[in-house]
Image (cartoon, rainbow, N blue to C red; front, side, top):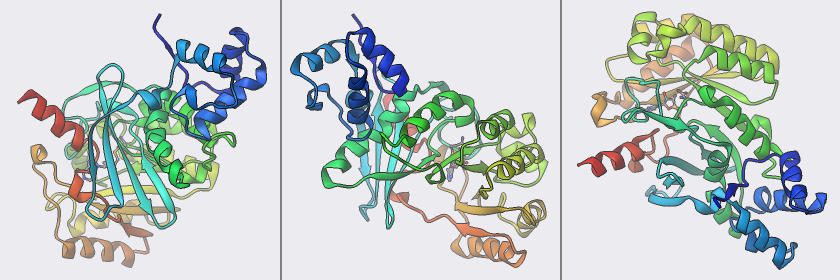
Length: 352
Ligand code: SAH
C-alpha cells in the first residue's frame, strides 16, 4: 500500500485521520508538534507515542521532510548562505536557500517545479513548467533545514516565497503551508515575517487581499513602461502593471503593510535615468519600498549586471525623488543562488 503523506495536514485534518485509526484525539496534537515544533523527520523520534503507535504511523504515512534527497548542495564562501537542490519523491527537483542573518535564519521557498512565467532574465522557466508543489513539499523545504538547525538550538524565523515558481498560481497550497508554519504549535512564524513575491498575477493578489493575513507582499516590477515590461515579463501582456500596482494598493490598504517592489537592474536595459524616472513617477507618493536587485546573470539569457556605479546612480535618483529604496544585500552570488539557477544548470548537465 502506498503511504499517505502526513505533512501538510492541518491540525483538524490530522485529528480526523488519526482518530479514524483509533488514536485518541490528543495524539494528533502531539504528532503535529513533533512535525512542526520539533522538526521530527521520522516517527521513531516521537518519543511520547508508544512503540506500536509509532510503528502503525510509519506503516501508513511518510514524512516529506525526511523523504527529500539532496541532489546538490552549496555553501557560499562566507558561510552565510546554504543552498540545496532537493529531489522530491516523483524525481522532480526544487531549490531552497537558507540565509543566516544577524537576526537569525530566513529561508527562501520555491512554490512550483519550474515556472510558466518565462521572464526574460530568470532561470526558473528555462526548462518549462512542471507542476505545483504540494503543501507537504513546501513545508519539507523549510524542515529540511530546520531539522538540522534544531540541533544547534537555532530556528528559521523568516520566510520569503521567492524561490522558483509563481506562488499566486499555487496560492491554496502556499497558504496551507504558511498557515501551518504560523501555528503556535508549529514553527510560530509571525505573518509579518513572511513575504510572498509575485510577478503580478492580479487575481492572486486580490485573493490574498480577501484572505486577510498580515503577510508582506512583494511585486516583481522590473520595468515601469508597458513596452519594456511586456518584453521582460510576458505576464504584463495579461495583467498590465498599472493593474498589478492597483491590486497591491488595495492589499496595502487591507493590512497596512508597505508593499515591496522588486526591481532587477539589467545593464543597458532598464537601468537608465529614464527608467528610474518612470519608476519614480509610478511609485512616488505610495506606501512602498523599492528593492533594487543587481541582476544575477543567467548565461542562457544574455543579460549583464550593471556596474556598482550604475546601480548607485539609479539608487541616488530614486532617493532624490523621495522613494524608499534599498539595494538588495547580495547573498550567495558565488553559489548560483538566483532563482532556478541551480536546478537549470543540473538539468542542462543531465541532458548533455
Ligand atoms: N514568481 C515570483 C517569485 C519568484 S522570483 C516573482 O516573480 O516574484 C523572485 C525574484 O527573483 C523575482 O523578483 C525575480 O524577478 C527575481 N529574479 C529572477 N531571476 C533573477 C536573476 N537572474 N537575477 C536577479 N533576480 C532574479
